[in-house]
Length: 479
Image 1 (cartoon, rainbow, N blue to C red):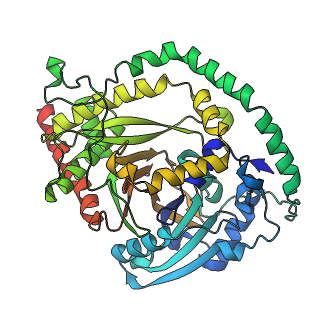
Image 2: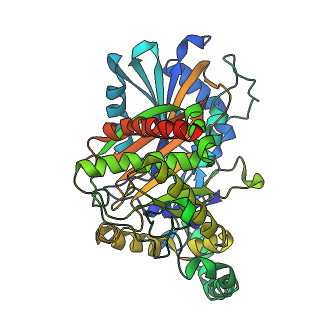
Image 3: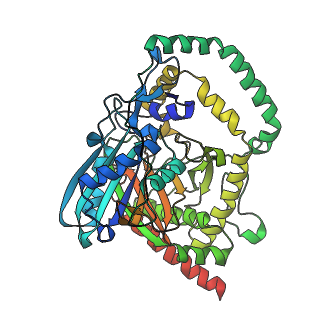
């Protein structure tokens, strides 16, 4: 039995009839390297033998009466792996467009909360004799980094696999009584005044560190000057403009994916003295700029991107759950010149990192764990039903860069060719960029509400065009 943190539970509260709370990954595999065919039986066998290494995959939610405390992960006494591992086939030869459409439909379906919160699909029929595996896990169970660690558990460093330690047969522990959990929850409620005092004290102690970030927020409006004159970033509030991305969504999704050479991104990085993530931010800004211009909807000022930041330390490696914070960064869509857009994106990201760094993370965790889930869920429903996130979006889009393995890996002996992450969209934030690095490529997964961005393929292709423009600028800088 394991109690969810307040942050884990928050991802449950965000789920509505229009938005799901799971994250996912689409793995493209070459089965020719496998010693035996990678069919449904083989995939089920591979996952089954690794399940003891990831206990949450055999646990379900167990709620506290009246939502007085965070729910618990408890062993699923009726765990059935055949429910969780499934297969489907595309009509041969299945195209990337057909694959993306099928994955979008799978990604739109919510997970069954009465069972362990994950599903895996073997997808056959792809062109070039490839296969794909789409796996989704609820965000309450993993974040981006723990999701990448889950890949290392399920995959191997060679086609032959690795010896797996035999485990005792799964004997689920009995779920705790609701009465017992209710009594514990009431005891926790009795400590609320003490916790509130501690939170207030910690917040007051943090004020000196927070002051530079709060007075005023200096990563707001982006100017049109050059880096030489020191006027690239001007003071002002960080306000997200209203765009077609920031509206009420439906339950339907669109998905697109693209892989781009890391060497080309590094060429741009080295020419301008920025980071790989800065180049990614500039590419996303340029791609969205093209999309907004096509709709006559380009704001005069920049967009605001929410960038997840892992706060998982060495002691947290191998543990599931969420250890993540976030920073808000200017996304300079209003700047026409690609090189200038990159410079501004780099400077804005540095400011955003500095602001995020001064927020005491322990304080954030304590606050997220303070409110009972019943109150959190109620507040989430009120906010999401009011459409306030569409009228006053705190940010316009999510851009997330997840670390990936830097060596070839295999699933059931089949070599992983590419892995495309998929994330969450919500009312008011109808589009998400997530990427992962693997084998010299950056693999982008783009998810959007279907009605918000029906032409998401064009945005994915624009990432290639933006990288081409940045490469031209890099060559010009190099002379």
